[in-house]
Length: 392
Ligand code: CMC
Image (tube, rainbow, N blue to C red; front, top):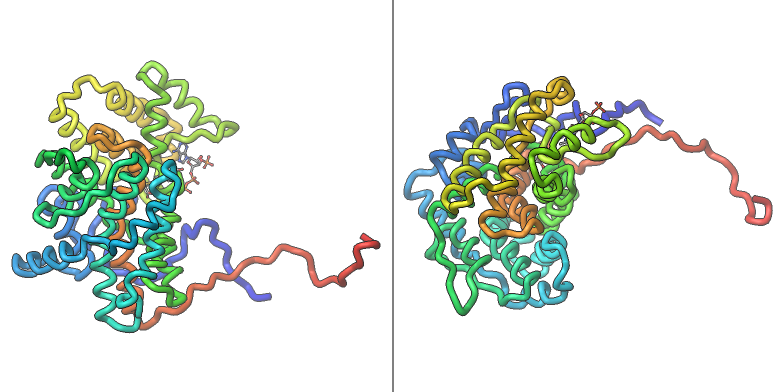
């Protein structure tokens, strides 16, 4: 009994107060603590944005240095954790490995699981941001049968991630500064996005008082789906399947056909009904990276650009306000850097960790917060008597 409002997909339900991220979907505007995403992507860098998201203000030089030192101090994983990686099949999807390993962190870092202790909460948030690149890189190394590469604290956050993914003991990977800048920009563009499905999952898991590692593992699981973080992998696979610009009309026709489940991956967004500002920066970055790598006339980039052009000119996409989202161009950059498609969503997960952690921290500090417990509209049978099996 009871009268509840059913809001499928929570399209008009606010689940919390927040001061972290603002999106104006009609204008295509994204602000972190008031700062526009394009300015942050251009002028700032990922760890500075992490500080901004976590603490609300841009850091002074001294605050930033201290924060960077703190994060780099936590980049190693407990040595025993490598046996968790080794327990997986080699062909496990790195997202499956990440869900398991991040969940297992609560069994390794007992001194940062007491959410009532502000100091432990702080250490947990630093550990998660610091260790996620190591976890994602090790999930990748394991999947290709190469030895785990330990983090290097003399490198930047992004350069260190590239090092852990692409160095082998026989030969260190020479990190190109333009590529590490592009990697950093991908991290920055994915850092937070208010109450999306995975962030809401983290908040709901946390509302019961679960420890931070369990909550972030829940977020990773939710992110994996192709409607959310899994779209970057699905998008590149789609672009490859299309193969060349002349096949585009066929795929656009399929996306418009209500009897065909096919959707244009990397297109459309629940909140943006205009250009996703992250996609604009990502498109520029894709051009820069492919130029640098000397990949001229890349057929996938050419297909993506032509697909974008044809879709935007099509009344179906215009009427439904479907524009390219952050996932449309990110895969092209990641593939050019040497990542397999299965690593695209793990890279999204590591970038989004700071958003999840900032929202989790904000939630725990909110005096109004209580367990999330939606109700339902019950449509099943009214009460009836049990019947014996012989009489059914
Ligand atoms: N291709 C073709 N048609 C689409 C697409 C698409 N990509 N996206 C939405 N539509 C149509 C949909 O069929 C529906 O039509 P109708 O009103 O006639 O039934 C209408 O547009 C509204 O779609 P919806 O599914 O009700 O909208 P939603 O807000 O529930 O879904 C979305 C948003 C992102 C899940 C959806 O646009 C989608 O599936 N896009 C492709 C996957 C994707 O790129 N996801 C990444 C999102 S951005 C990164 C992230 O936050 O994770």
